Length: 240
Picture (cartoon, rainbow, N blue to C red):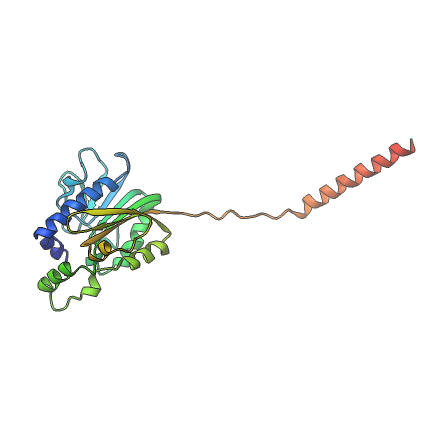
């Protein structure tokens, strides 16, 4: 099933509330400057609710069907093969893309490749445990589609991020009419269990190993020779 399910969900009363909350969350989470490079993978059509593309000249939307804000730069390409230079992007947004991506892990590798060290990643995903979303999916789905094959648990997302050296900065839970942001990882609560969707904001870390160079043999000989000269000079002074 393609992202048609997502757009059908946004047309329901609860889906409209979810869209409004996600727009507020994205607007709050986008902290990069207007001069930096931002990439959204997967168009939504309501980008105006969280980004001013006339102000963010470098905001780019990559979508196979060229969906998204007409004021943004557009790239028609596949998410698992980004036609973008390595380490050239400051912010990547994945709004409900991974659930409907058959090559989701390859897409994550591509995101890791194009992000600069210190670049940020924002992910929105549907909560697999939410009963109302699950019923909507079962009503709309094709016989070949599987619930587990699409929607991703929070723990799996965190494992992927850890594997790729991302540090989780904050997480969000979208309830019926409000959302809550937690610093760090997810906090277990009844709100998290019944939330319609969740969000993750992470930063790409790049660790450099500093090699320890041993003292060379030449340096040791020079130190020993210097000590010997000082000793002999001291003995001559005593004879005088």
